[in-house]
Amino acid sequence: MDDVKNDSGETLSGHIKIRDLARGYTDKEDNAISVIENCSVEFEPGLLNVVMGKSGCGKSTLAYMVAGYLKPDRGSIEIDGRKVIEPGPDRIMVFQETALWPWMTVTDNVIFGPLARNALPRAEAREKAEELLERFGLIDFKDKYPAQLSGGMKRRAEIAQALINSPDIMILDEPFRGLDVMTRELLQEYYLQLYEDTQLTTLFITSELEEALFLADRLYVMTEAPNNIDQVIEIDLPRPRSFEVTATEQYLDLKQIAMNHLYAGAEELM
Image 1 (cartoon, rainbow, N blue to C red):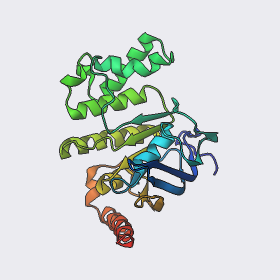
Image 2 (image 1 turned 180 degrees about the vertical axis):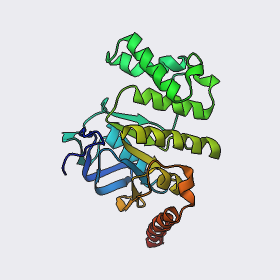
Image 3 (image 1 turned 120 degrees about the horizontal axis):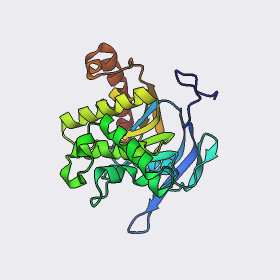
């Protein structure tokens, strides 16, 4: 595909090409279990790409392979023409579980990555961290420890922890799972605002249809394992986007389309 440019005419990074991907595992009885089979898909740069499907369908496995934490059994993943063979600073992942070190302050957690890679001097890293914490409403908690933060605050700190590394791609594996509804919606709005400001290429994993529709530029629906991308739905809701969009006829039409695909996939397995 041709280079994708942002509104300023700059070429966007983070074009993910997946070809004939397969990944499985062996269970306790030494049975080979296939999770992903013959998966070929592209995630375009500059888009908020959302992959959704039922728990256990392989979407987190796909994210871990894109991040470089798992190797495929077959097939390949390329990012901007480079084959993925290991984790790298161009891809930063926010996990379902907290990645904050409990013995470090919020600021020290955020600056750990660039300091560990010798990417920034400490003073510059702290300055950049405080800018991010200000943006995420955490500046008053910069010297607190993770145990002193709410669940939503921890998630915001983890996103700041990822962003300070200036990645080309953000990979988020159900990052708001387990939070109460109000906190979840607040964090969705936080990330959506961040994306709309930066056009940072995003691969967002979720099992929640409403979350997927609210966030996505493009929605990828995964089937049951052994899995593939079954449907790709363009989410042409206007940006900037707020929760008022969920009451529009356009949103409800897209929700019905997505539900039809999900139900059709479930019926084929019955």
